[in-house]
Length: 115
Length: 111
Image (cartoon, rainbow over all chains, first blue to last red; front, top):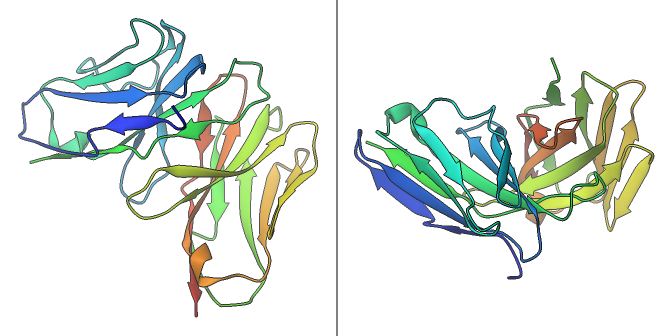
């Protein structure tokens, strides 16, 4: 597609509920990133994929967070047993082959509110 | 620790002014630096990407400079317009592939 697509745009979850957030990267982009952005802050790195391989998950805040990209294109970020501190905007970004020369294209994000 | 800091946190200027947004980073061994714009409730729009070997990049009324030795980048906006009102984020890529972001500068251009 022309850009990075994320769905849903908004999600309200009751505390303890599981949620799944989807990211459709730009076709041909092998690198995919997930970020978490709290209100008034810059995005914080969560995890990184190169094709289907999850090469870095050091930013995931707890074992309730899980991400996958089974076929090297669409990715899903899953949060189990959501808590209020999980409320944030979750941003997905993709990039062309990882040679350090390319910038990143971000989606519009999913705003998660845990009530 | 590799950190990115942006000053000021917020800025309000009258229309037509030229302005400078500042970004500083703690480790000069960067791959590249990218400036983004974020409108309320929206994702990030890439404005300029500066590779580590470059000193500046220009796009229209925007000019970004990079001084690795001092750990600084500036985003210069000429002849500001109300449509420039947004949050501007600076992001640095070091050895790891992910970007590290500053907290942003919220710009308001008054008509």
